[in-house]
Image (cartoon, rainbow, N blue to C red; front, side, top):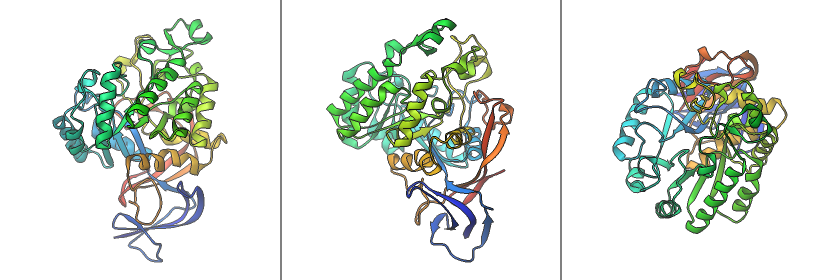
Length: 419
């Protein structure tokens, strides 16, 4: 079967270009363009881009299906233009055995219309006391290892885990925070936090955690991705680590790029995320780091929470926000605001995560999988959280004016969503 996308504005994050043209797909793979095809899709001048690759999605199976299932997360991903999601192991119970990993792999294959890859826990029960069977978990299909936001405090345990992961070529994903300082914090420290009377953490906690982890990487030689760099003070340490040739990459969340500490002004718990929202100076510094490539990847850090855990006093409310469907329109705020062009933006959401995970997707080139999205970057709309396909509706963007909508999503050349 052949599929031809005509009259498209093609975003190529690999070449850094946006060009008018056509893209041909045969049997799920991008091929050289031809003049005829079994199916022709007229993009009518809209953008055609690689599907988003989202590292760090929480799907609440097993244990909390009422918050998010693979069926609902898969539908939300397709509607948001996410063609590959990489799920976190911070479930109940955690994904720390080959049997647990096999269960969620089967569930994802049955229920989700998109590509689903899985992380496994780096230590058993994410407790930071004993490392998991990394080799067996890799054999079972784990693409990376992480304890999520549970920072391993015992440096001897962490060094052993990183050394073992290095010997197997495994990718570890670490959360750069000093765990004692950040424990119980709801906001970032400063005048605003003091006026609101909320427990706060200094931005230095991220820098301190990052410095320690970089030293561990230098000692072990492990492959590491930092899941969320959100402060200006952490950026020099990250730049030095890369300049010194360490095998490190870094990501940040879409919420830290588009929101700041003042958004929690009325104690709105939908704006409570982890790490907490930062100052405007930190937000701009993080955006600039993405634009220059110092921060490699933008992720949704999709974390579904039910109404009961969010409708609480801010200090007690659960942290996290859903973002699979809002990732692209929120990211387009950076484009419309003039912070970066579309190829740079899509490099951080498609090409770079594909490179870090060793995937052939994330690009529009001959031989690549036809994981593609057609979207209109200019369509304005007001987000109503009740319209989201996720089971949980805890989005900070509820009621906000947004711009940009996914029109069609394709996985291996098969249409999985149409607006």
